[in-house]
Image (cartoon, rainbow, N blue to C red; front, top):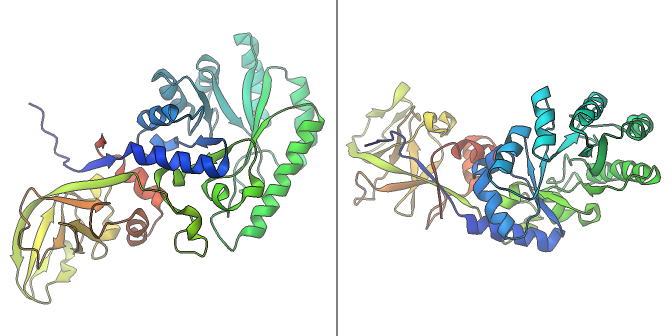
Length: 372
C-alpha cells in the first residue's frame, strides 16, 4: 500500500479551459494557447489534449524540453518553444521533434543553419523581436543585418514573427502598447519587402481583449486561458467577462480544538486569541507551495464560509478560525482556492500572497492534480 503524505489536491476543470479558449477565439480569431510552465500549473499534456479537441492547432510551450514532452505525448499540432534553444542538445531536438523555436539572436541563426546541414533540411523558426520588453529579441537596429543573414542562411526558414507586450494589461499603458505595435509593424514590413512571408503574433491575453488593432494572423493567450481577467479591478474589467477560473485547491482538516482567550498559536506567537475561539488545523503549508507570506492574512473556505488564517503558516500545517462553525471536524475538505459559497478567487489569493495569479497557479499546480 502506498500512502502519500501530501493530502492537498489541485483540481483542474478542463471544460473551463476549453470554454475560455473558445471565448478568446471568438474575440481574437486564431489563438495559440500558451501552455508553458506545465500550462501554468494546470498540466501540459492534459491541457493540450482538450484544446486540440477544441480546435487548437498550435501550442506555445516554454522550453524545448517541454516541447519534446508534448510531442512525445502524441501532440500532432505545431509546437512553438518561446525560450528557444539554449544548448546543443536542444538544437538537435528541434529538428528531431519538429519544434518551432523563438529565435532572437544571430548566434542562434548561425547554429541552426549549421545543424540544418547535418539534418539535411531547414528548420522553421519564429523570429523574436524586442519591441519594448528589453529581454530577448532582435531590435530595430538589427533589421538590416538580420535580413542579410537570413538570405545567406538557407537552413533557417522564418515562418513566424513574434514580440511581446509589456503593458497591455494596464489601462494607463496604452501609449506604450501602440509604440510597441508600431515597431513590430516596421519589422513585419521589412520582412515582407525582403520576400519573407511570416505569420505574425503580438497580442497576449490583454491584447486579445483590449487591443484589437494589434491582432495579427494569430494571438497568444496565456493567463486568460486559465480563467483570470487581466483587467479585473479596472474600468476595462467587462472585457474579461465570461472567463472561468479552472483551478481549485483543497486539503483536509486534521484537527479542531478550542483556543482560549490570550493563548497564542503557531511559531513566534504572532497571534493571540482576543476571545475564546475554535481553530481548525489544516494540512497545508509552505512545503506544499502555500506561501508563508499568508501568515495572519487571507482565509480558507470552510463549509462555504471564509475562515481567517491565524498565526504563521508552517511547513505542513496552517491554523484557521472556525469559531461559529460547530460542525467542522477532522477530514472535512477546506478550499484554499475556489469552492462554493464565498469562493476564493485567484486574484484574491494572489493579493493576500503579495504576488500575481501566474505565480499562485504555477506553485499550487506543483501539488498532486486531479482532472474533472
